[in-house]
Length: 427
Image (cartoon, rainbow, N blue to C red; front, top):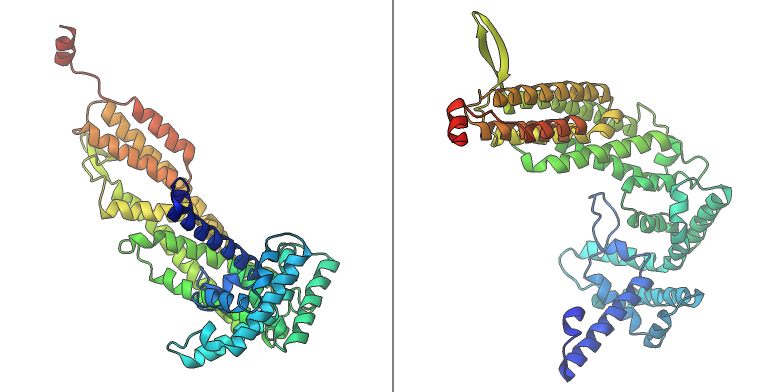
C-alpha cells in the first residue's frame, strides 16, 4: 500500500502515507520489543506441540502495554543498550496488563479454562523476556559446539530464570524452542543444561522430558502417515511424505547423538518401533518403484527370427496417466531418500535400485531411439515423448549424465526419408 500511495498527490494521499508510515513504525517497534515472544503467537510449522498463544492477542497486548507509558516509544527507534532496557520495561508493563486487564488483552471466547491457563503462561513468559532477550544472541552458539564458558552462560541463564519462577528454566527453553525452525535442535540446548542431561534416566525424570516426548510424538504421527501412504492413490502427498521421511531421520539421528536410550524404556521402545516401521515402509516403496517403472515404460516381446524373441519398448504405451504419475512420484521419492535411507538401513538397497533403474531406463531409451532411427516406430512423435519420459525418470533418480545423453541423442533422432520422399524433394 505504501508503494501504491507514494506517487499520489493531494492532502488525502499525504494523510494516508502518514498513517501507513506510523503503522510500519509501530510494527517495527512491536517486533523489537516482543522479539523473545513473537514466534509463540503462531503455531509451529512442523506441527510439534509447543507453548503458543492466539495471534489476535499480540496486537491487543502491545496496545495495552504501550498505553501505560507511551513516552517510551520514541526511545525504541535508536540503537544501543538503552533500547533493550526500554523493551524490557515495556514487557514488564505488558505482564502487568495481562494480570490487571485480562479481558482487554485476551477476550473470553470458548474454552475459559484454556484461556486462564494461557493468561498465566503469557504473564510468566513476559516476566522472563529480559532474560530470554539476553540469551537469544547466543542461540546459534549453543546449537553448535559451545565451549565451557558458553555452556556456563546457558546454565547461569537458566538459574536466573528459575529464581524468577519455579518453572522459569523450562519457560525460557520454551521461548528459545519457538525460535527454532527445526524442532529437534532443542535437544542440543537441553543436553547442555546439566552434566547428567545426556542420561535418559535423569532427563525422563526432569521437567525437560516434555521436549523429548513431543519429538517422539511427532515421529509417531509421521510414521503413521508414512505407513498410510499409497502411491497410486495419494499422488499429491509425495512431497509431504518425503518431508516426513527427512524429518523422522533428522529427529531419530539427533536422538542417537544426544541421548543414551535404554532399549527397554518407553522412549527406547518408541524409537525402535518407529525405526522398524519406517524402514519396512521405505523398503516397500523402493520395491514398488521398480515395478512402477516397468508399468509406465513397458517392454514387449518381439520376434526376431523363427522362435527367437527379445524385449523391446512398447512404443504404443501411454505417456501420461495414473500409471506414469505413480512411477514419477515413486522415482522422486527414490531420488530424495538418500539421507533417510542411510538412517533406516536401506541405502544399500536404494543405491542398487538406482543403478538397476539407470541401466533399465538407458537401455529403454537406446532401443526406442534405434526403432525411431530405423523407421520402425509407427508414431515417431509419440515414441520421442516416451524417450523424454525415460530421461525425466533418470533425472528424478539423480542420473543426470545418462539423462543428458538420452536427450542429446533424441534431439537428432528420426527416421531417414524414404526413397520416394527423397525423389520428390529432389525434384
